[in-house]
Length: 168
Image (cartoon, rainbow, N blue to C red; front, side):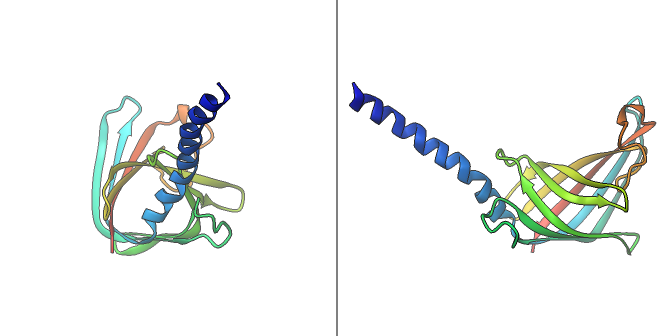
C-alpha cells in the first residue's frame, strides 16, 4: 500500500513543480523590445455608450529585460515610453510580472506622483510569439493619474485602452 501511495504522489509533485515554473517561462517569452504599433482609446459614458474612439499608430515602445532585483525570472524590468501626437507623453521604468495563467500583466509603480504609487493591470487579449494586444481600463477620461481612482463607481465615464505590440 505504501508503494502505491508513493507512485500516486509522484505525478502530483511533477505538476506542482511545472506550475511553479510556468510564470518564469511566461516572463522569459516577453523579454525584448516591443514596438507599440497602435494605441486605441475608447471613452464610454456611464451607460456604456461610446463617446469617442481614437487610434494612433507608432506611439512608443515597451522594453522588457531581466530584473536584476529578482533574477529568478518571475518578473521583468520595463522601460515604457508612450507618445501622443508625436510628443513624449509618458516614460516610466519599473517592474512587471504576470499571473500564472498568462492573461494579466501587472506593471508596478507605473502610475506615480508625489503621493501615490499604483499599478496598471493589463489583460492580454491576443498572444502570439511576436505580436500581442494588451488592454486596460481607466476612469473619468484618464489613463494616467485618474482623479477618481479611489472611487471608480462614481465615474462619469470609462476609458478602454488597447495597445498592439510587435516584438522587434
